[in-house]
Length: 236
Ligand SMILES: O=C(O)CCC(=O)C(=O)O
Image 1 (cartoon, rainbow, N blue to C red):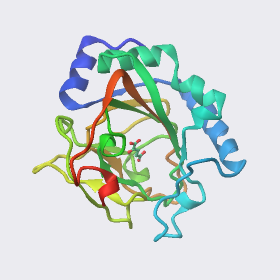
Image 2: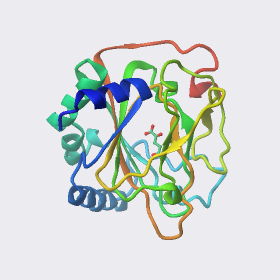
Image 3: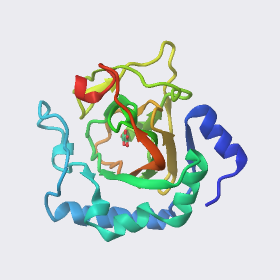
Image 4: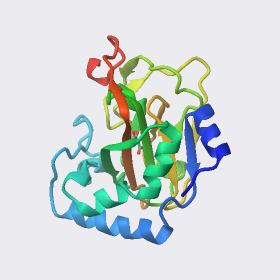
């Protein structure tokens, strides 16, 4: 996968880029089988079903897994595919270093994640996310949503509505922000800047999952920064 100049420019302008079939659809299907098996094996370090004020949220039964690449060789291989790293390098202009992997199961009825900037969590810049749809991802299942052109500055953090968000923090939106939902097919990838505001709403279906494989990379020259008071999720 080699990104063309227009794709790189679009990422720079908008703070995100959707690319079709970053993983082949049959590979996405195999990944679903793999992660459902891992989930069935029991708890893993860092599992997160979200805030416990909504005990009926099915995310508690299928908690999000984190940093699978530390203990699952297949996850490490998928997250460090050489052509993926090359695409990330094109976008961040630095040698990518894998910082985090996650698997969000989002079963039918599962809460989404309040809109946020990843640098409100991971205080390193540059930071880039790569979100891979494993199931068809549309509005009904709580697709990824982004605020285009929101990546120029870090925004203050406020409390999220935990009826709809499994995390307790969200970003303040810039005035007049437009929220765009991204329809994605299995295997499609969304690259997004560490300061792009993004998140998702609940899965409103009774019978469809919205599983996604998520990688975060930093640049080799990336630097840690101290967030100002009120600009980190730890502050709410
Ligand atoms: O998958 C989602 O709904 C949200 C994921 C997300 O916000 C992230 O990976 O930073």
